[in-house]
Amino acid sequence: MSNNLNEILGESLFGKVRRKVLAVFVLNPESSFYLLELIQFLDCGRGAVQREVSRLFKAGIITRTQVGHQVHYAADTQNLIYSELRSIFSKTTGLIDLLSSDLKTCKDQLGMAFIYGEYAQGTADKNSPVNLIVIGDTSFDAVKACTVEFAKETAKELHLMVLTVAEFKSKLSRGDSQIKEIISSSKIFLAGGLRELQVLTTVGDDLFAGIY
Image (cartoon, rainbow, N blue to C red; front, side, top):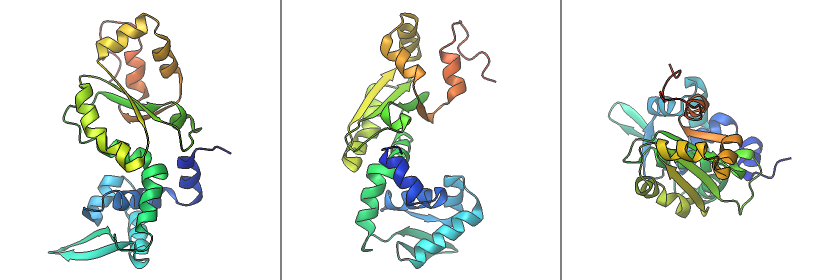
């Protein structure tokens, strides 16, 4: 059995849709969401999201408020188990979701971003850092700024590497051992994907040849 708390809690305590719905509410206590917004945001089936929202409301974990013609739902921060749920999601099951959400606030457009190392391999424990690499026309300061709250929320150390495409390809062509190890390791993509990475790691002048 893996000792990755993210994986263990996600599989043992929460189903896929429930985990996603819970993560949205407990990690965003200051926000409210209407049902269609949740369905579009989570990219899950309408019926599945409706069922989970109904169950969480009946359990008192989220509140329901009529705003005009819309019904808005929000985390009930006064619920007895809210703080425990937030701790679980911010440190384990919702950790990747939280980092992905933080990256979406980056003022620079992300090219490619993925987690590598123990969290991607499924071998992370409570002391494992989160290793993130961002490749594209994004500054280190911009990425750092949008992830600064991540360490506070999760009590996790974030190891951040930000490279331009030219820097990445230069390191690759020189046979940089760290870059070679990162490329060959397991990954969790937060922006871009395997196809784009394959293009980046292919020798040639046309960076985007073959993407479409």
